[in-house]
Image (cartoon, rainbow over the protein chains, first blue to last red):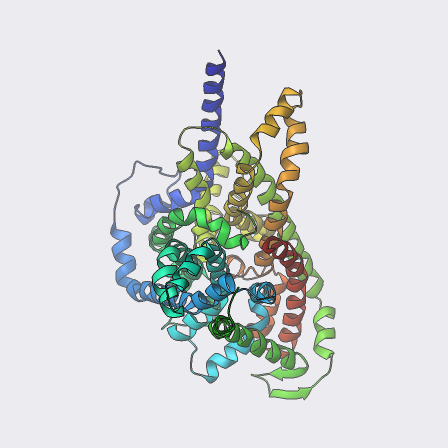
Length: 276
Length: 287
C-alpha cells in the first residue's frame, strides 16, 4: 500500500518536473529546431514542430557569408587565453593564501572579490581611452587581458577553496623529505589540485565566452567574438530566423555541453564558497 | 608553523595577482573620478577644464535620471522576486524522488549557459516579434491581436527574458541548500502533525534564508550591470533605460565623458553598498 502511494507520488513529481523542465528549455530547443528549417518554414503559421524538411543549409550559409570561423576563433582565443593566463597568475596566489595564511589573507581575498563588484560601465571610458592610447581597441590581446582581470578574483577564489581542502600534513611530509618550494608545488600539490584547477578552468571559460559588455564595446570587425557576431543579427537586414537560429546554435552548443559538465562546480564558483 | 622564508615566498607569489587587480581597480577608477569633475566632450571641444560638482548635480537633475532609477529598481525587484519564488518551488520539486532527475536538472540549468546576446535575440525575434514571433502565432490562434512585446510591454518582456536567464542560477543554489536540509528534522515535524505549509515556513524557509540572501546579493550585482539584453532588444527605448544603460549612452553615444563619469561614480557607490553586505556573509564563512 505504502509503496504504491510513493510510486504514484513519484510519477506525479516526474511529470511535473519534466513539463516544467521542458518549458524552461523550450526556447533553446525551438532555436535548435528552427536552425534546421528553411526561412519560409521558420515563420510558418501554424508553427512547424518536428515535421518539416530538415536542412543543414543555414549552417553552411552562415559559415560562408559571415566569416564565422574568425568569430569562433576570436571567442576561443579570448575565452581560452584569458582563462589560462588567469590561472597561471592565480595558482601561486591561491596556493600561498591557502597554505601560508597570514592575518591579512582574509582581507586580501575579500578585497579581490570587491574588485569583481566594480560596475563595468563606471570605468568604460577610461578603459576605452587606455585601449586607444595603447592601440588595443579591436584587438584580441587587449580583450583577453581585460577578461583575465575581470575573472581573476573568481579564479583565485575557486582555487583557494579547492586548495584549502588539501590536507596540510601532506605538505609537511613532503617538506620533511626535503622537498623544496618548487617541487612541493610541482609534484605534491599540483597533482592533487588538478580536479579543482580543471573545474575552475571550465567555469571561467564559460564566463569569458559569454561576457557581453567589454566584447561588445571594445571590438569592431577584427577582434569581435561570437557575442558581437550574434549581436550583428539585430539589424533588420540580418533578420532571418533560420540563419539566426543556426548562428545561435553554433555559438551556444559548445558551452551548453561544457556547462552541463560543470554544473556541480557552478555553485561553488559563483557563490565564492558561501554555499556548498 | 610557516617559516619566515615561506612567508616571504608567499608574498612574492601573491604579488602578480594583487598588483594586477590593484592596477585594474585604481587606474580606471582614478580616471573616472578625474573626468567626473571636468567638462569633457571629445567631439565638441575636448577637455574644457574643471567644473567642480557640476556634472554630479546635472546627472541627478536631468529628466532621465529618476526614470532610469525606477527602471533599474523595477527590473531588479521583478527579476529577484520571480527567480527566487520560482527558484524555491523548482528546487523543492527537483529535490523530490523522480525518474530522470539528472536530465531534468540539465534542462533547467541550460539557459544560464546561453550567451546574453543569443538569448536576447532569440526572445526578441523568434518569440516576441509582433508578426512572425511564436507568441504572435499563439495570440492569433486564440483570436487575439498580436502584441508588440518589446515596445508596448517592454519592461515585462525584459523582465521575462532576464528572469529566464537567471532562474537556473537561483534554482541551482537553492537546490544545493535544500539538499543539505536535515531530513530527520522534517520527518519528526511530520510525525508531530505539522502540515506541509508549516513545515515549509518553519523549517525549510529559515534553513534557506542564507542561500536566498546570497542569491539576492549576487544577482543584484549582476542585474545592476545588465547591458547586452537591453542593447540588443530595445536599445534603451520604451522605458527600459536603466542607470547603467543611461551612463553607457552618456559616455559612448553622446560622448559627454564628464557627465557619464559622474554617473559612473554613482553606479560604483551603489554597487559597493550591495557588495558590503555580500562581503560580510562571505567573510563570515571564511573563519
